[in-house]
Length: 270
Length: 270
Image (cartoon, rainbow over all chains, first blue to last red; front, side, top):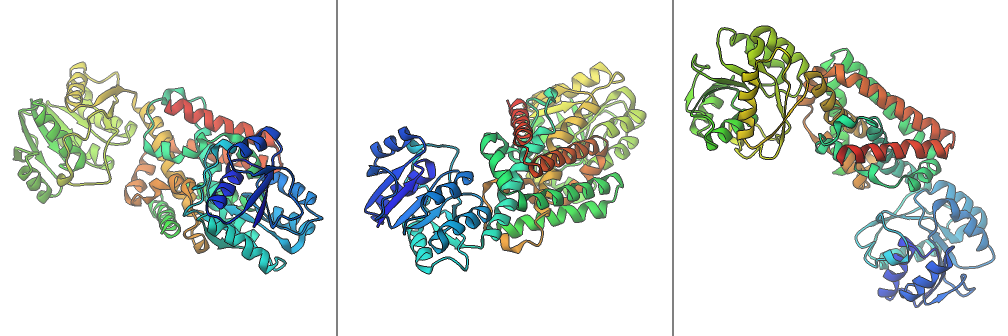
């Protein structure tokens, strides 16, 4: 298997290393918007050669930020390779990529990654035991789907298939909404200097992900806005209901809202 | 020092054990709404004797749920001992208790405790290195304040003085609001069975405290409603602002809201 890699950062670099180590690919040719990153990836053994996807490539992994995936796919129009991506939003990417590449594009999203970036952060064990969501559509060629699945299995991941829309709804609920809430919960206390040093674990855990750099999240929240906006509305309505129950001293209503939350958490986390 | 204890549960039992171990009290006489709990506390060495506060008691620790504190204080009307409590809400308790006991009441709230309860969960090390907030008022007798402070210092705690109102505002912001948010964030996803098994750490941590039994929180949210309601309003407004920024594709506004949250978290946690 000849692999082409576009984007030699944390995710792309880790996948290439994992596949080489597993013997699942023979050669990796790759490039990066930053030429120094591609050269560094070659030094680290992530790439065998720096350069654009060769005509002989079997698979092209597009490991660039979500907003850039469709643009990169346009450049792959003339080829024959199976193409996949790793973007955290899927419906808009799959629509755009299929319009250019048809059934040889398979959307993917590994539920892995750390706060690190760049080729030096590549880790061949990054995907071991982690879930990867693939989003094939009726248009997807079965051989393309199998090819991409086999790559992720070789990297040690567990592969789950979902529609692009179901993927976006799930990550909006389980990742994007919790991030929006953590930033907002902390932001409500901006300027409250008298609270310094008094916080316990409920504040610390409830706002943990608000320690993440906002740069990535500005993009993600916008890219997935279709799925996120109704959830923000539902949360606003739920907080308003709790506020009304507390203001009215309605212990039954408060208890019902809290018990529903507790049960939903248990049902999701198992 | 002769200590009287009303309520022999997790907090009261732990404090009595800690004070006996530190040699800060000679005898502890105590009772509990549940006679079996008081008897068990005597077996465990928390109490030297079961019974109501004797006239000779120097300090009475009222370690009952917040809603019952003022009622218990009414029964202590005729005595002379310094009286303190451990309730997680302070303004309403201090108002009520001072109207009965005057300057010999000192409100207190140890920022400690676990999900366990009852005399068997008493742990003399529970308060070591933990913060205890005392809420003296202009009416509080200086000797009463010193007496209560010395007890907590003997138990290994760090003592901080705040007004009852400042205490309630701080715990509303740093504990009650995060709990309300965690339950609501999970509750928004009630019935979403397709999400089972897909959650990552941002959902798990963001809703961690929603695993707590709702029973306690139904009371706490209501007892502290004066401080909590404006915070729920502010959070609703902040989520609405984020929603509007995402809907409008206003990256600058999104970035500002997220950056404020990140900075506020850092400033509070240090």
